[in-house]
Image 1 (tube, one colour):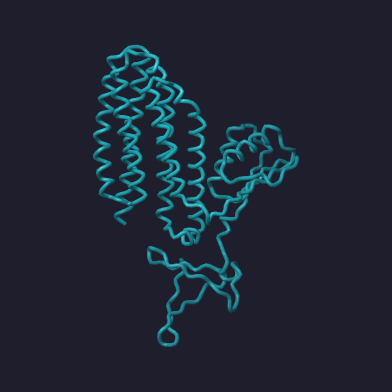
Image 2 (tube, helix red, strand yellow):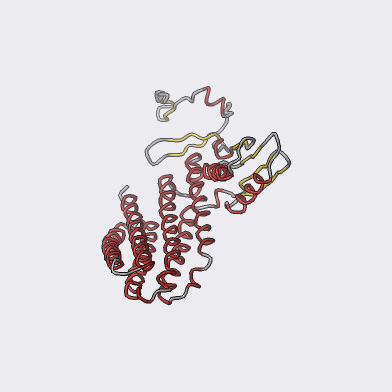
Length: 333
């Protein structure tokens, strides 16, 4: 950090000179205007007029000439997207293999906001077409909540009504949750690189950053919904597990309500209700442990499935409590 002394001009105005190297590097000249943005920690950010950080308009080049592991390539694409690069260029001087173009095409169809703008034998250019000023991470969090809540309710309905039709299309719904989690993680990185976006949206960077943590927690709850759906069929097909089934449904519905309330509390920063959610969560964790103990009296696939399901219900309750704890932490700032 470069330290400069404050001077007084005109008897009342404070003045500080700007570092010449920095001013020249961002194109500041005589009579140019700069923006002054007060920060929550008491700092003052200086922004050249009409500027945004170079990171928010950056290009990530992925050289695939020597890449033959398509899983690695797919993860590189996800990483470049989440990192916040506005353009991803895929290049191979020896020519793009069909496996590379196929993975790139599938990725663009899954990731929110991307389009392939250029493509030839040796390179592909993927561009983010979303206006960041139109995106609000908290809205994406609320959408994730609805998707996960509906998945959990359908899982419980399948067990309650002994009807596996409620379990249809779970994988695609989980993929939608993953897409939103990627988007929120991307938004967090973009906001951290260009804090002027948060200012324009009337949000603070700490709230935006927390969205990434909450989003990941919701995504993990969605993963547990998949675990539940995969293990429910053993219980649906086995009438000897009916007593445990009823306990799972009753406790599960309370856990779903806890999850929804935790998200709503986090959005509202209501620490009183958040504290109540934590207390309810502790009770539901105890009930889940009791269900797990009940499953030990079962036999065959039903016993194992019930134990796995009870553990997932417990983890969902614990994740919901984590969100409520984040609410209290945020409200205490």
